[in-house]
Amino acid sequence: MTVPTESGPAAEPPSAGRLTPDGFPPIRRSPGSLAVLDITKYFGDSTGGIRTYLIEKGRYVARRPGLHQVLVVPGPRAQVVDDGPVRQYRLRGPRIPFDPTYRLLLAPRSIRRIVEHERPDLIELGSPWLVPWLVRHANRRLGAPLVWFYHTHFPGIIAPPGLAAASWRRHLANSSWSYVRRVAGIARAVLVASDSLARMLEGQGVANVRRVALGVDLDLFRPERAADRDSVRDRHSLPPAPLAVYLGRFTEEKQIEVLVESWPEVRRRTGAALVLTGAGPREALLRARGPGIHFIPFLRDRSAVADLLAAADLYLAPGPVETFGLSAVEALASGTPVVSVDGGGAADLVRASGAGALYPAGDVAGCAEVVARVLSADRAPLGRKARAFAELHHAWPRVFDHLFDEYRAVLEARR
Image 1 (cartoon, rainbow, N blue to C red):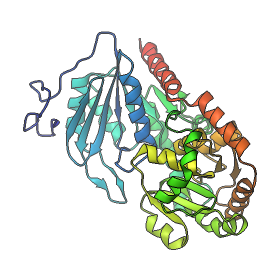
Image 2: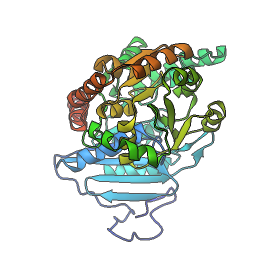
Image 3: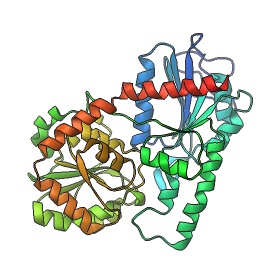
């Protein structure tokens, strides 16, 4: 199904379904239902955490009468995917030059028309640049409450902990907090997925911060998949050695170079292999700096991700500015211990679960020491702790029950 464009309604009728006179699919919402519109630019074909969160939210909504989700994201072409209580608008947007895994949302008129047609009860902002202001303009007539999910800790990305940063970057990072407060000022609530980041935001004067952890599919990510570890290794041409896996985007703020530089010492002490899985702008640099390290392209199949995490002996979370660490909690659910840098959301997960260890940001020798120590220990007790923690705290239904309670609290406070 095509979507109305900046210039007007869809040029051709859809192959299935029907449209209103304005070129939109009709509203099928029941009286008293709760409709949430999610909008973000962070929804690429080879991206992870935010995309997973939004897709899982759609699955939660689809199983619960009275809930509706409208998703507005960029794509290579304009289209609508209409699936009952979940409707996805793709707006054509150009790739971001310095990070082509993402596209820009540059369709103010389309966003306004979608908001006014869908009339959501609440709008969740999922990215901090441009999108909040496009939505604020689009929402002038409707006046739906806005919430901002703080998925991207951009002050930390500008000047990541543990890395030497030029003075201008440190100054820009400090100045960016005023922008954080400005975006927060147009939202009724700022949702944050980790306690450490929530405390940081509150310390910077951001008001109305609410903690909402993210989750994991406990049926998909489970320790029993480790029974197929030999076939997983064969599938990806991995050696019969202990495996330490990183899964995510290859970008500066992830600090994967710390892992690469530490690995000769880890390999000397344990014989372990380092597996980097994903895609991103620093891939060529990592390949050049890490001969002998194993690379697996971005895995679109979530079952393949679950197989790999269960087959791993250790999961590595080197990014100190993670707002949650979704791959880390997926590893925990798989019964795989986690070694994380000592900052960010993944570090919170390791501390809370007791199923891993931490090393100082930017410390290559410290990373090697901690990884080698965990790989050389009995990891079975850590694996049991990891799974128990994920089951108790991070099942997606529990997470979304909490999230929609927060939405209702925002709506109730508005009355």
